Image (cartoon, rainbow, N blue to C red; front, side, top):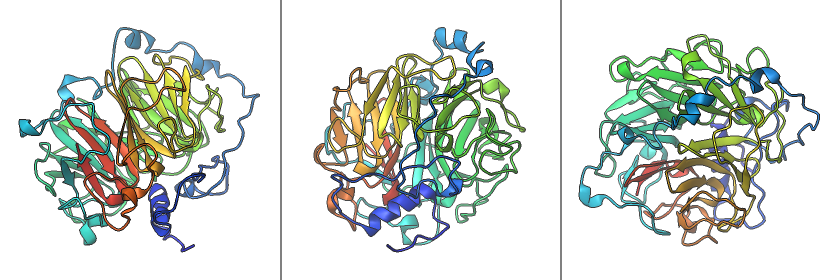
Length: 455
């Protein structure tokens, strides 16, 4: 096997491995796993091995300090919802109304438009050259707020902002955050840069960015984002100039790695796959010196981090979504969805349903990453099956199957670019990571094709 360069991002490394083994059959293929943080591997390489997660400790003590007195229970009960999933202010600016295609989507349909490439066949990082305002390298998080499109351009360590949803292929971004210009791609640990941005969330207060390689979520005030972009708050580190796995020791203030963040009412939910947990931190608590989580899912306390398969346990959670009622957490390590029928308010709460398991059909997943919930539909980026699964309703039973698939001809397909391996197409995907769904647009980060698709 050809060695991968050490500078390649962990999730991107997996995708490059797929390229080296192009068009192999995935039937019976066991996806790579994220080992426990105690493993000798660093946080930046946890997605690289093919190791099974360790069994969880059945004797984990409870953490009464985190489990009691939840300060946001009344807010959730009063109907606070996830900004972006249900907020009318986050509706996509449609441009040409004739292009508006309401959901549900049709299986194997073509995308309407591509960002990061000039056509649907090309897929080279930065279009085979240097970064620019119209190129992408391993894009991940996608989000729309108040008509603006935000893309976490992971390989270029930046976030691109489009003032309106593009209406032509290969459109150029209007603004860049994290770099001094459109032509620089330097990773940073600072208040003005990123290192490995993945999932993003935008609300009226902040652009929140999960930075895998900085083991932090950085918060950038929206009011000054376009004129003087600078992060002013952080979660996972003691300050904006520090990085490292579980800095100061595993606690309710630390992250091993992080891949997604969502604003949910009065709190931000943050995935911490390296510690096999999801953390909730109050928006009012974040600041330049970090904050303590008040809610932990997947663990019984703030000082445990073992992976598990029980319904109160998580294994490498990478994505999450909330629709005002239900919470869905995507578990990469268990190839499943942890579905909570209401927002949990106590540490260690068990999911109401664990859906999925490894496989290639309408009932299973392979290394899933991102998800999105609307009032009536659930979308899941099923990375190693190179597809987006669409459910016309959140599953309530393990036998509830997906209804629509994007990126494949049917639910039996799993090859990248439908095994047209050297080029992409308008109806194919390769390593899809995150998805955003508006009232008449579905936006997908087609990561290994170095593009974002709009359906």
